Length: 111
Image 1 (cartoon, one colour):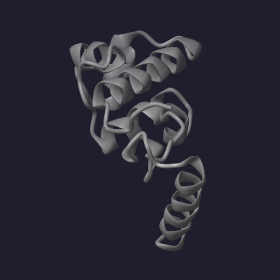
Image 2 (cartoon, rainbow, N blue to C red):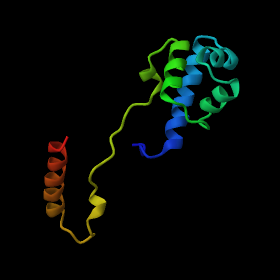
Image 3 (cartoon, one colour):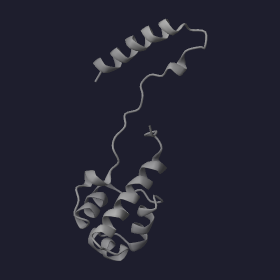
């Protein structure tokens, strides 16, 4: 599972998806930049994950490469709300299991 707080991973993944979509429709970085209203350098930096893009830029890029903006985003993986690592080593397994059931059940009802 990937840490959703890892912004570098997120933007690198988005950039790779943009590059793949751009090459699929046979656009150069410059052609994509022109269609999306950004510089070619921005496209290069976005594709390598070195530049964070705005939502409207993502939308423009998706339109240019003929895919839904959702296709350029990685699958969402919810952060774990609870971890057995929070327990000291001497907590019995049955107690861990019971506390896990209680805690996970509470987090599900909060949604």
